[in-house]
Length: 54
Image (cartoon, rainbow, N blue to C red; front, top):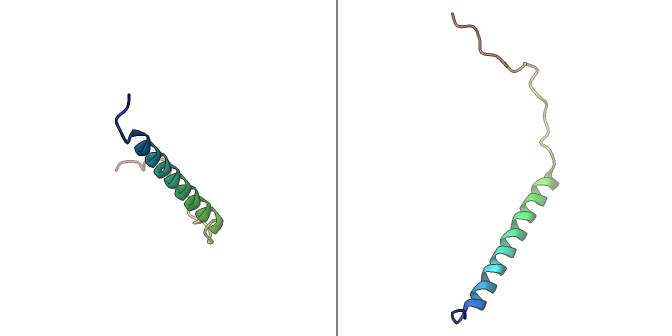
């Protein structure tokens, strides 16, 4: 029904996908573990409207 080697190729693809998912999860956990950056926000308010045209 399937070409020879199809099962092995499918298994290799599954292993590659699982490895990539595990690495992505490890990266997210590592970034989360570092926490939020220290510092303070700017005291200046952000402009929310377009200034009047002269």
